[in-house]
Image: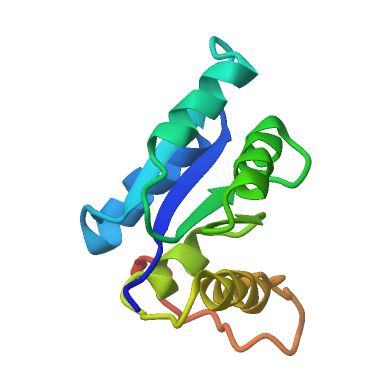
Length: 142
């Protein structure tokens, strides 16, 4: 199976910010769409924008947080269309790591997004057991 189409939706500039970050790492991805839910939009506007992106194949709607308007509208669409799945609360790392993977179905893809998010969320421990020392060079990053 080819990877499901991904629609990223969130409050404010959540979606477009993720889009900009992803493009820095992997370039433009044809199977991903990004929709910002701005204060000028109504819930009906958002529903319409998301609905226009749904195709005949499997679709995953990736929302910023559970319970928010983007999530509710995505869930409403998914309830009416079994080819649509909704995953919420994931991060940039999960989108990056799944970019070039293939999945058997949307459920496997969504589970991987959640699993990667769990693995990549961490706390920096600033204590005596830290592996960082005074000679470490912090200037090199991604």
